[in-house]
Image 1 (cartoon, helix red, strand yellow):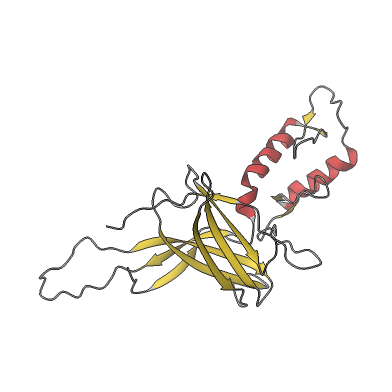
Image 2: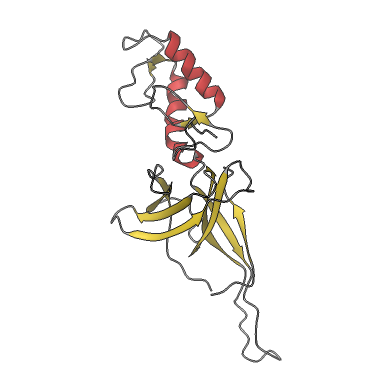
Length: 222
């Protein structure tokens, strides 16, 4: 079905680039790497990063006194912290995939197809505007080739893939892309559970971004 017009609407707004340039685990605007250890790139708020730094500098390791628990920001993290900090880290770990700048799920609005019928003869009355799932990313190298793929979580089969050239002039600095997958949104949208797939992106032939779990179901437009 060819829409009369289409416009992208972001479902999630979308910084952290290393000195060598943007990385696949770049955080979207408002988030930074947590830094519970050197390779901890979970995206959190600046306040959570600062709390983590204080815990790293002053916290006790392993033997927690009463009222304190292991932080568990990552497997083997036995830093002693207050229970609220452990809960916050668990929440940050669960939300991390949705805070990435390279893979941001969007929805594209499509106008209902224009009717070709005349005098009400043979006209369809059930056509309406509809939405399809899109993928957007920021903070890439301008001019880089971006490859995006959506993979079935259970079978590993590629459900959709697309390519784009990271252009400038988007909502964020550096390069950005914006693609419509053409997959009709149903069952509540791409972030509605249960998740049956994940999306990843990479620029040029570099590493894939972390897997972002999504719902990518086939449905019919009435």
